[in-house]
Every structure is written in C-alpha cells, then in structure tokens.
Image (cartoon, rainbow, N blue to C red; front, side, top):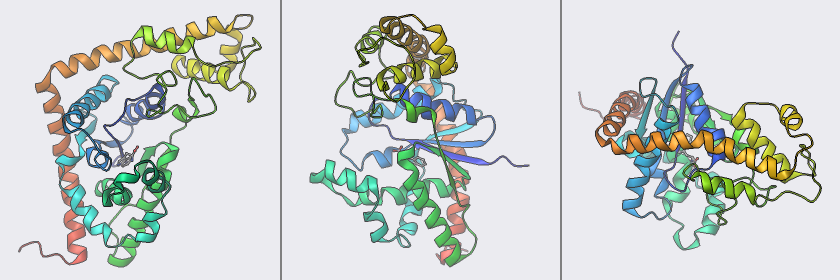
Length: 331
Ligand code: TRP
C-alpha cells in the first residue's frame, strides 16, 4: 500500500529554539520512515513581513542545513525551497477565488500580525493562509504536523479543499492537522507561564539551537524558579516544572524519574544538569550543520533533488485543478 503523505514547512525567519527542536524538527525526522514526507522552507510566507534579501537567502540555506543536521534524510523525504516550485503561487491564485475575504480577515494570526506590523498590512499577509493551503493541497497531504498556533490555518486548508471538491468534483485530499505536543510544553526561561518563542525580545528567555555551550549554561543558570527549594512538577512551580520538562524531553525520561534523580538536590544542580543535557544534544547538531553549510555543492544537490520530487507531485495536482476549473492547457 502507498504510504500516507505528510506535509509541513517552516519559515526561514527568526532563530529556532529548543522548543522548535522538540516540537517540530524531531517529529519531522521521526515521520520520515513511516510516511512519504514533503518538507519545505517557506520563504514565500516569510516575505509577508519585511526581510533583508541577503539574510533571507542565508537563512534559507542555514535552515535546510540545520534540518539535515538534525537527521532529515534526503533519501527519505523531499526537502525543498518553496519558491522553487511555481505551482505554489499558481494554486494560490486559483484558491483565492474560492476563499472569502471575511474568513481570511478573521484569522487570529492575520489580526495579530496586522497589529504588530501596522505599517505593512499587505495583501500577502492576509493571503498567507491561502498560500499555506496551496502548499498542503498540492501534495495531497493527509497529515500536517504543526504547532497549535497553526491549527486554524490547517482548518482553512480543509475548508478550501472541501469547498473546491464540492464545486468541481473530487480533487484534493482533505488534510488533518497533527498538533505537536512536545514543543508546546516548553516555556520561556524568564516567564515560565509563556511559551518559549523564537521572537522573544529577551535573549535570556529562549535557548536557541545555535547557542554555544556557555550561553546555554548561562541561560539555564539564570532561569526563573521560585523561593522554595523542591524539585518537582507542579502548577504552582512553573519555572521548575519547565526545567524538568526540558530535561525529560532531551533525556527521554519521565518526570517521576527526574524527580527521583534530583530528590534532595538544589535548583543549582538541576539547572546545571539541564544545561549540560541540552548542550550535549545541540553541540553535535551545530557541528554537523557547519559541515553541511561548508559543502555548498552537497546542499545544492539535496535541495535540487527535493525540488524535483516536489515538482512532480505539484505538477500532477495543478494540472488536475486546471482541468477541473476549465483552464485551457494546450491539446
Ligand atoms: N505557517 C507555518 C508556520 O509559520 C509555516 C508553513 C507554511 C506551513 N506552509 C505550511 C506549515 C504548510 C504546515 C504546512 O509555522
């Protein structure tokens, strides 16, 4: 039987945090063996807010190298750059004609970003979910692994798929979101009731995948805890709970095991252990990423092979769509 199809993408903007690693990257890697996976670097989404062109290009390659360093296997998935597949823009246009201004203007992320970038509320920002729907639907994806903040966008993709299928006949697989749990629990080290975010203004709040060991240890040393000295998971102890959760996620242990391990020890011991555990995982990834980035030919080959796989699938779907809507495609 054919493998089910998984689609996801990540924007080449902002520094990825250990929350992104636990929530998104690790899951992408895990899914490769079981599903047919298409993974994109969503640079077309990225330009809906202002980007420095040279930086966008650099980040695109850095992100591709990072994902490879984390274990994406080019033999087992298609890793590609969104803008290299013209069908994304083409399908977006077609889907635009069945997407309503009302539904797009009600999207949470559009409203948030309009506030944050009030000087640049461009059409692309509003159309973001339609481009995302085009991404997903082009590949006939069944599952879309995303963080909880992207659930509403996958729902729009579902709505558009169903609407199109109803109007023009069966064309698209209706995708389902797979909401990633792992990363959702990772909170800011400074305000541990808030999610750790790659756009946090306080650099001590987030641990980035690119942080060196000294920075990692320092950030954990400064992490907010509380005034009693008991190492256990509890709603009343968000800071300590967060540290234990991070420790467990990186160690692959349960919270009970961690609580036992740290019984009788102090917060300093916990902070040091978490810091070292995290650094031990991310340091080799950083070295591997550096190696990949140094080999430009290899990286270009991987992205080209990914784009070729993606192109084949995308072309098949778009051609079907054009037939259904009545576009002339030559004889
Ligand atoms: N909007 C997603 C994010 O910011 C990135 C993305 C773009 C995406 N296209 C996608 C995710 C398609 C899943 C499927 O995280």
